Length: 592
Image (cartoon, rainbow, N blue to C red; front, side):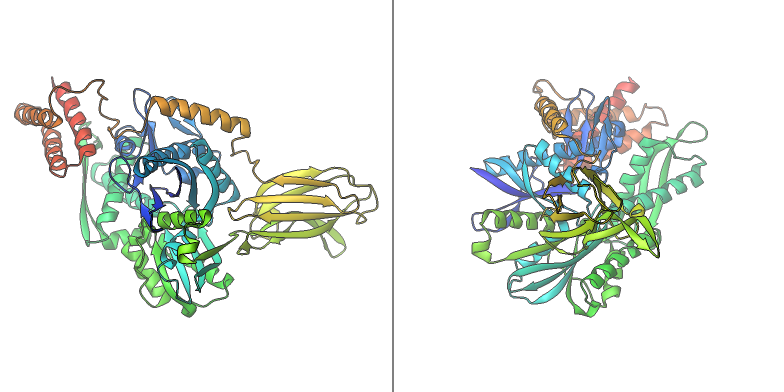
């Protein structure tokens, strides 16, 4: 039996969900028994690809062979280098999706060939196409892309089918921010407007704190960490940990041993306390920047703040106390706690998968609509006084139009004897095309020559539920048509490239299945004779004995590694324990 799943392909973490036999959405666990899979891909020293926890462990020790937050590169020409290999952002996302697909198949006990994948509402056409391509490379049919705040609203709305109200979903994830305004009535969730920023998220909070930590290190030791990739990765990891801690405490220590060499060449560490007040000061401008998209969405929906009955916070970064406080101040009341901030999007995607297959509508009677997040149009010439001016943007589909939608506008030729018309398709809100984003362009030949304005050309934009645009042009007098599917951007892989990439990734994946073994540790070729527990006991005993005779500048690191390994074993954190085991082994080997 083949299953259709919902996938939240996140910047920081990704999740998979599916409907159970009763039609309820449930999250599926990965091979480590966890619901969240880090959206990280790594290549180990032996050429094996890893996805998830093991890749995240490598990020701290081998950042040159590891990539995180690839979602921010989607739809852009920013290749990824892992060791001696190069990948496109689409291929990296495909590796993550493939790992999620295999985990889902293991959990469901059957093949998974189709998925509903979520994307930020403010993702561009190129980013949406790249996401669909990633699904294809991962062996998934992705006929439906679902906007993330819409998915969260679906997860919320399925438990409030009798409500008639306006709801605002504030979705602040690891790398993107979206806000959507919805009307709920009689089981219908009607998206009225969306806005956002696809380059804003919790990662920016981490970076702001990491920059401050770097400045504190430089102030203490007189050494700049700029250009030190390994140190920057450790700073950001420490900043993320501090951010999480500060959601529940007012202050937290940040200790990073042996972060870099000091002025005299000896190892220098960072040891500083971060208060919530300090963190708030660093990120206030970033959080306040989310207020403008909220105002824009409310204005487009023609609603006031008082019209909103419920404010739903989703996305891991919405846990930051300052975020909740500013949203509460903006609306004059506390946001709703009715959905899990990490899980709502994936659960909503699973419900959409159920709607697609018919498994949900019969049981729940729920329907959802969505909108086009950007204005779409073409470049035209306009008359200003007695002069004709080019480069003017003529909208065909205004932003926040309910989709799917098809709109047609008719334009006239602008020159005597004109035989062809160039159609340039843009996305944006500016009056001039130079300030908008060019999606694609093509030329329609075969226009009968005549006086300027004599021939008419009908241009039809069709925008589907996945946010994919088709453009059809028809010469009115002859009926000749030309069609463009806006998918030919340079950032997108062509059909032959996609086939080649799919085959290559399958070969590399087949030789290197996703692994829970940390990449910094050697991968065993045969089962060990002794148990892992016995090996760890022996290693700890040897390391503890060596502390007394180790050089003075090494003793603190030996003690730190021993303590951390004991703690990881006590928590049964096998991934961390294996990494620490490898580091301790390497250090003892170096000491001789």
